[in-house]
Image 1: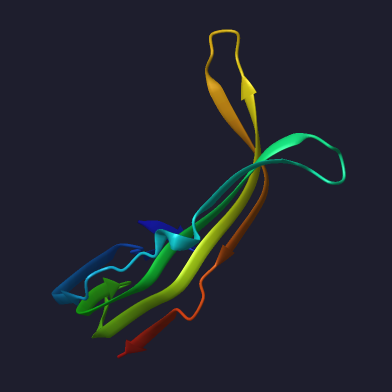
Image 2 (image 1 turned 180 degrees about the horizontal axis):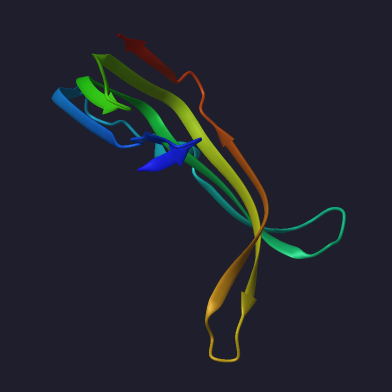
Length: 119
């Protein structure tokens, strides 16, 4: 319970979903790349990764949630397609041989993904 100016506000959220349907997930690993290279600006050794995340995947469900004593319901559809991540990282090793990535650059592309909500 949160009180603002002496008025108690319930900030409790209750979220439920039902009728979950989904398509099989499709991942295209033909575009996967793992390259050991050098940074052009510093000549440091780095690992470049191109990771295709989801080629195509869709799911939808009905939802119901309660927030601040109000009820909301509807239908939601999420479709992800042509998503990928690119990273550039260097690796540091400890004296015990543990490797720790040092992330230099990260690019996330959600491609043609979308979220559709009908209340």
